[in-house]
Image (cartoon, rainbow, N blue to C red; front, side):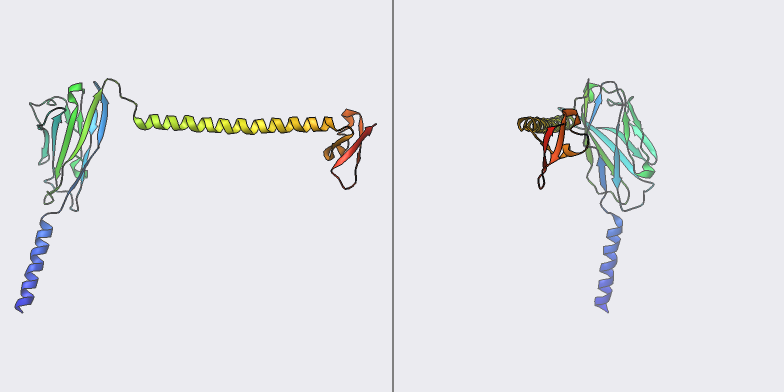
Length: 224
């Protein structure tokens, strides 16, 4: 009985610990590009086995390029968004997420070159509070560069187009050569024409009368 009671206690403690906290997985983009003076949405969402808690929280930090230190720029807790009133985005950051749908996205406005850097999102869905924050890098350009994938796709398209053109020219040349050889062969053998010419009316334009040769595919063309 003592062993059974000990086993029950262990199972209850295990279940209690399991119910207390589970891992939470946070998602952001990998890298975003934007133009100077434009706005951009930085998405942040999470996966949790729990229902979305009323105490869900989102936190965003920012680390400028060339800096080792991160600064807090946004925090959502208790149903209220808080924007840092002293940081570089104090007048240019807007919360556009939907915590009920596990969305903690923010909108950055009027971007400048100085906004280049890494933005990190952290989320908690009590009791699920254990998870690794996710980061997205922002690159601001005067003109958005053409991505390598677009260039590669264009090169592949050009190469395929050239191959199709070469094959078409090849078969066209074969057709023209075959037709030329056929015409020369007909002219070089007096009195012979293909069996097709033996059909009524096909030799009339040549002033010939076709007489089929039995057992062959040719005919003797005689003057009409």
